[in-house]
Structures are given as C-alpha cells and as structure tokens.
Length: 415
Image 1 (cartoon, one colour):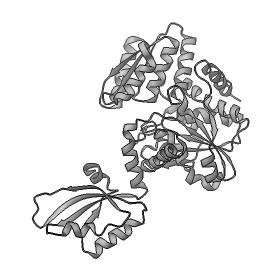
Image 2 (image 1 turned 135 degrees about the horizontal axis):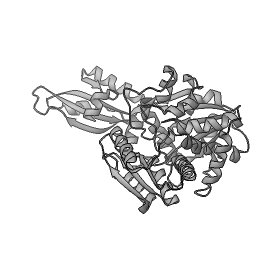
Image 3 (image 1 turned 30 degrees about the vertical axis):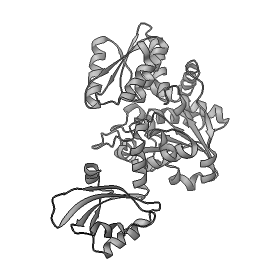
Image 4 (image 1 turned 60 degrees about the vertical axis):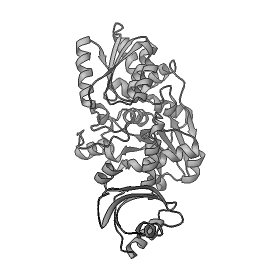
C-alpha cells in the first residue's frame, strides 16, 4: 500500500479544524425508486457549498509546512475553487489574489469576497478563462507567490480524497458503488485513489456533462486532449481538458464506466431534488444523481454513494433551468409557423390547441408580410404525447410549421 491513504486520512483530520464532516445521508426517495440503499455525500454543505475547499486547504497547509515564509497564494477561477481558496486564505491568515474573468457574475465575486474578507484581493481580467489563467500565472511569477491549481496538483487531489475517508468512517463499511462527478478530475482521482487501496471491492461510475466529456475522451484517446467545443452550462464540471495528474490516477477506468449527462436532463434532476427533497444543487452537483436511471439495473439491492459536489446555484438561473427541463421532457416546444394573413386564421389556429396546451410565447417575426406571416410560438403542455395530437391537427389543416425546439442554432438565436 502506498502513502496515499495515510496522507488522505491526515488531510481529513486536519480539515476538522476548519469544518466538521459533511453529512452522509440515506435518501429514502431515491432508495425506494431504485430498490437500493442510496446515500448522498453532501459536499454541497461545506462552508463554501462545495468540496473545493478541501483541496485548497490541504494544498495551502502543506505548502506552508514546507515553506513557512510563503504568505501569498494565487488562483484563477470563476467559481467554487475561488471561494475555497478565499476561505482557506482567511483561515491561515495569508494573502490571496484571485483572478476572475471580467464576465464573472457579481454574485460569485461577492461570495468570494465575503469568504476571503480582507485577506483576499480580486482581480477581474480577461473575457475568457484562458486569458485570466495566463494573467494569474504571470502575476504569480512576478510576485513570488504560490499558484494553487484547481485540480492538477497532488496536494489538492490528496485533500479531495478526504471525502472518501469520511464516507468509509460514516457508513461504517465500504459501499458497493460510488458515483462521482468529473470536471478536471481532482475529486474523482482523490476518492478512487483512497478507496482502491483501502476497499478494493468498491466499484465506481463517473459522470460528465455531455458537452464536457474530457475524461471519456482522454480514456478513448489514451491521454488528455483538449475538447474542440465545450458547453459551459454545467460550469462546475465543464472542463475542456482533464488534468494531467488526475488522469494518471484515473487511466485504469474504462470509457463505458464514464456516463455522459445531457445538460437539459440535469435540469430535471435539479428541479426534482429541489421540489421533492428541498436540496439545492448546482448543475455539477446534480450529476451523480442524474445518472441513476442509467444504473438502475446494476444498483438494485446495492449500497450506492452519490457525491453531490456543490450547491452554489444562483436562483436567477431558475427560469432557464425550468425551461431546459421542460424541453428535455417534451413538455414544451417551439415552432415557427406560417400564419395566413387573413381574418380568422389566428382563431383557427387557436382551436387546434388541446385542453392541456398553453401558449407561452407568441411573436411575429415578419410583420410586413402580405399573404403569410412567420410566427415564433412556444407551447407548454402537461403530457408530452399531447404534441402528437396537436401537430396532427395542424397537418390536417395544412398549416406550415417547423419544430425548432432542438435546433441549437435557431433556438439560441430566437429563444
């Protein structure tokens, strides 16, 4: 056995000086649905509502042990890592300079400032993260500060492994399966690194957002590669290239063990956890729960731990989350309709709506057309099968229409 499990346990003990263990909670709702023992490791309940505090704290602790004179730490982040670094800086009484893109939402800036207090200075620079990262690293070299990477750092990985230490201690035994979200790979590398040595019988499943499959791609290609496109909706796990160090600790995994969660489906999970369980999860924090339907057959009768990695959700995004969820569930659709410019045409169209259908948007796109006008129309319904009947009635009446619900380019431009 390597030194990693002992180092992870030491990190977990040190973290107790910062905050208590996050809860490991059996979820009755999910357990009943899947016929399994489903436990949630609530990393959304750390002081910064994310596991990122663990890695930042452990890395800072170890750097200061080796170099007590180092009193300045730098990071580049627009999210949970920034808040973790800020909190750790205040705890250790050291200076922190946190670089964030100019486009960072004010809520995240304010929370980072609150966690860091007077210990932290925030620098807004760059429209894109790559520009922000370059500025942070250049500043770090010039100032002689220590750069704290969000996941590509051995001490950060070791700190994230404290999640696994707590799982075993709290459960009192090893679970059958652990489901882990993956972004840069630090959490997955730490948790699997610990459990594969102390409880080798544990199996793992990993979950990435569909638009950020950096681990799956790396496993298929034989090493980390930069994704050509990235969907940033799951901002806590949307990473274009998995970290080198995390990948070295995860290269044993098989591509089929990495599940890809559609961004809109994640929204359904977020709303269900909020409405049914009263649990607020950010998109990345919902990944491990979102994949459970795909695992239903193999987890029946098993003990499963899902790591809910974060709960930093801005409720101003709730309308977008609801919209995405409805579209994925087939309860909301958008059409471009060619509406005849004659008396009674609108009344005729409205008569095609069923008793459970409701117009949520109606907008003329070409107001000067003589014979036909193009209309963007959004319709909500209570049951997805209602749309087949609705479009059937439009076909019978010879209305010309186009469903643009899943046309990414048109939907982004028009909706």
